[in-house]
Image 1 (cartoon, one colour):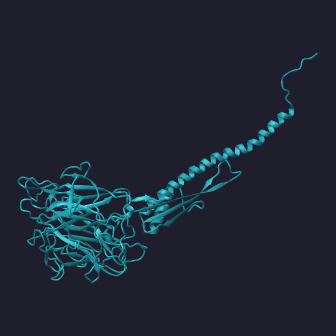
Image 2 (cartoon, rainbow, N blue to C red; image 1 turned 90 degrees about the vertical axis):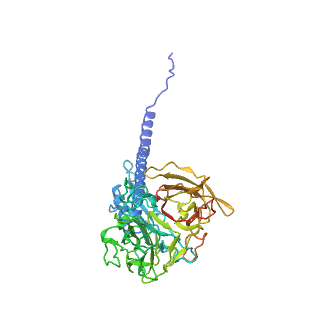
Image 3 (tube, rainbow, N blue to C red; image 1 turned 135 degrees about the vertical axis):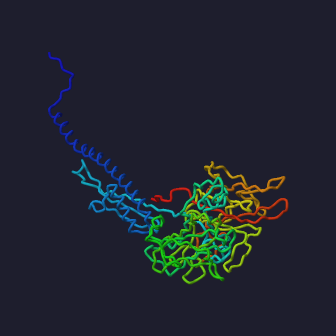
Amino acid sequence: MSQLSNAPVRRATERGYIIASTALLLIPLMIFAAFAVDVGGWYAEADRAQRAADAAALSGVVKMPDFVAATATARATALENGYDHSDPDVNVVVERRGSQGLHVQIETKGESYFGKVVLDEIDIDRFATAEYILPVPLGNPGSSLGSGIGPTGVPGAPRENLLLALNSYCQGYQNGDPFGVGWQGNRTCGDPGDIVNSRYDADGYDFIIDLTGPDDMAAPVTGAWDVQIFEPGLCNQDFESTDGTGNRIQTTLWKGDNTLFSDDDNKTDANRAINTVSGAPDPYLWPATACGSATSQWVTAYRIQSGDPRGRWVLNTRSLPNTAETNLNSYGIRVVPAGGTAPCGSLVASSSCPQVYARTWLPIYVPNNIRDLGGVNVPTIGGSEALFYLATIDEVHKGKTLEIKLFDPGEGMDNMQVLTPDNARLPFQIATMPEGGTQGSFAANTSTCTVGANTYECLRVAEWIAPAAARTDFYNGNEVTIRIQIPSNYQCVQDNPATPLTDESNCWWRIRYEPLTNPNTGNVGTVTDRTTWSIRVIGDPIRLTE
C-alpha cells in the first residue's frame, strides 16, 4: 500500500500564469518608474525656471520705466540662466507693472526621458514680479528747496525756514559740513597742527529735479522750466563775506533719463545741460557778484526746454578746494515756469510740475536772520522754535525702520523733535560717531521734552549746567544716528495737488527745533544751526512681490 505525499502538486498551467501575470504587470510598473524619474526632472526644471524668472525680474526692474531696456535686460538674464527667448520651445514674456514694477514669465517644455511612449513633454510655466522703491526724498513738498522765508509755492504750506549751505574747504569739521571741509576740528587752512578731514568729498552735494510723474516715461517734459539759485554769489548773508574770503559755488546740471533707480548713469559729459549764463554745458563757478537784482535774489542758472527728456535731473553743487575761501555760502534752489517767478506748487512730481529735493545728504542752514525774496532781512526764529520739513515717508514703508543721520546739531538749540504727519513723536534709538571715531552701539533714547502740557520723545542736544550755568553742547562735531520703528499700522494721506497742505494731510515728516533758555537770565536763545542731514528706510529697495 503506497503512502500519500503531503507536498503540493504544482501544475504546469500555474507556472505559465505567473509568467504571464508578471509580464503584464511589468509594463505599468516600468511606466510608473519612468514617470517617477520624469516627474522629478520636471520639478527640477520648474525650480530652475522659477529661479531664472526671479533673476530676470530683479535685473530688469531697475531699468524701469524704460520698458524696452527692462525687457532686454530681463531676457538677457534669462538667457544667462539657460532660457533663450529665440528658442521655439521657450517664451520669456515681460510685462510692466506700473513705472517701478516688472513681471517676467518663462514658458518652457519639460522633456520625458523614460516615459516618451506615453507623453513626450509637458508645459512648464513659472513667473516672478519685482518692484523697486526709490530713495526717500529729502527736503519739502513742492518745487523749491532752501527758499528761506519766501513763499513755498504750495497753497497753505508753511515757509521752509531754512537755506541750503556749502562750507568752504578752509573750514573745520565742527562747522556743520562733514564732506565739504578740508580739516578736522574747528581749524582753517594754515592753522598749526592741521589734520586733514578723512571724509572730505570733492563731489559736494547732489539735488534731484524730479520730472518723472506716474505715467509713461516716454512722454517728454511739458513746457519750459527755469532752474534758479538763490544768491549763488557772495551777497552778505549771515556768515558770508564780500572781501574775497567767501565760498563760491560751482554747479553742474545733468539731464534726466528713463532709469529712475540709478542716477549715476545720468552724470556723463554728453548729458550735461547748458548754463544760461556761460552758454556752455561745463561746470560753472559762480562769481562773487552773482546776487540777483534789487527786487529778486533768484538767478536763473539753467533752462529745461519743452521736449527735453524726463526723469530725475541731477543738480550738483560743490565748493572748490581754494585756500583763500574761509566762509560758508547759503543759497536755495527752485524750479519755475520759464520767465516766471513762482514755483508751480504741485505736491506730486510730474512732467508738468517738478519737485526739488536732496539726493543723499541735505546740507541746511537755519539762521536767526535770513534775507527774504525782496531783499529785506526779517527775523524768522528770534527765540521761537524752528519748524521745517525733512522727508516724505509713504505707507509702503510701514513696519520698517527709518534711519535719520544729522551731523553737528546744536547751535542755540535745546532739543530736536521728529514729527510724524499726525504730530506724534515716536520712540527711537540713538548712536553717535565722534569726530575721527567710529559709530557706537544703538541705545534707547531716554530724553523727553515738554511742549505745552504734553511730554514728548526728543533728542536733547545742549543744556545749561549748574551752578555756573555754563552751556554744554553734547554733539559738537558728532554724527548722530536715530532709528525709528515705523508702526505696522502707519497711515498717511497720500499727497494730492488739489488738497491744501496741513499738518495731517500728507506723508511728510518734519523737524522741530526748540530754543535753549538761559536759567540765569531767562532769555530764550536763537536757533542758528548749520547741519547736514541724511535719511533712509532700512531694507533692500528691490524686492519680489510675487
